[in-house]
Length: 117
Image (cartoon, rainbow, N blue to C red; front, side, top):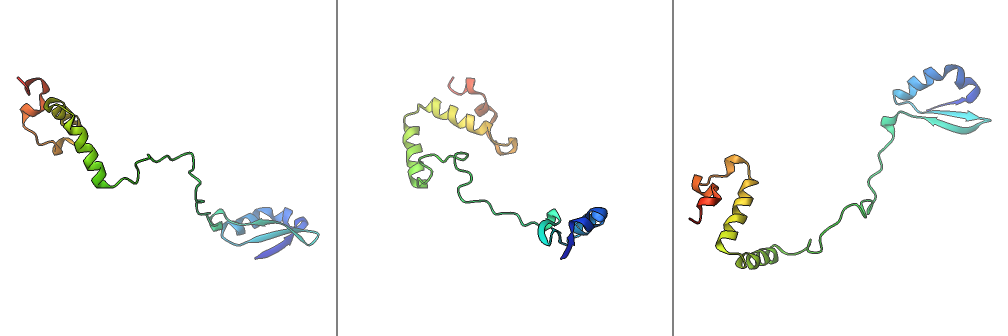
């Protein structure tokens, strides 16, 4: 670490900046009091994120901690209220979201208008 008075630093500021860019720390003083520290941005440690810094940005649903068994049970109960045609429509809507190679359904299953003829 190099310490230099401001009056001596100004004429050679380019050289001091080059030294700082390579990782050397340089303290510029005025009246023997530290005034500025020149450091490379790479040597400044990043602060870890503060706990709670995403408050009011990220929201979790009320049922976030609901068990998988409860979710499946609730889904099954909702599906019982659907007619067979509605259940098939729901399934086909889901299949449309899959990559094409994942949808190994017979051709007739992809045509909604022919399913209940």
